[in-house]
Length: 212
Image (cartoon, rainbow, N blue to C red; front, side, top):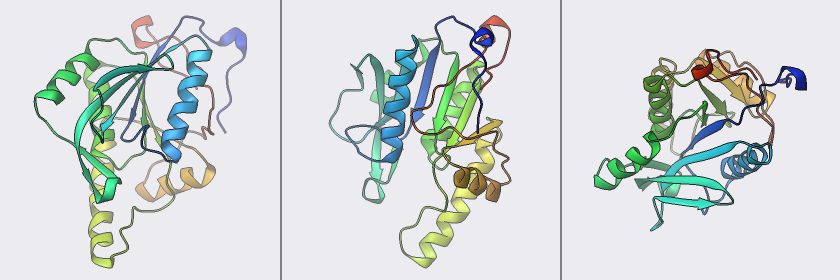
């Protein structure tokens, strides 16, 4: 379990967190709830939160809900809504500019196996922003077809291989998730349970790296 630093050790300056989550409300699921609860906790602690997600419906690409800045990238909604893949069109470029105009202290990436997650890790690396990946699964994504599941497993391993080139810090929402990360030769640094608080030391702009 990740232990929060003592209050005297926590840097008090307001932070700006950028959370990449391939799916978010109005799409409903465990990752979506986790993202919302975490965002609420971070804001309640006096921080700013930006969520970058997929536009799985006819929604605004730029809006604010509950004090959370939400950017939605246009996407193809594959596998019955289970696997959104963004479209690199004019709207994508427009939203991308909005994302990049802000300064962030930490990029939080929910789940490993989305192209959206790889995009978030590459974005953080290119901007010199620390990033973490939070694992939510305990098995490969399945479509209940042996052939497609096998190919999907290969794809997931390849995507994870690429992701590891851009992000070094991995966590899980449970001990089981941390153990599953080991299947991809990832050593988790701890467990971040639902609605947890992230405590970080000064940002890279202050000359330090985040600390959980």
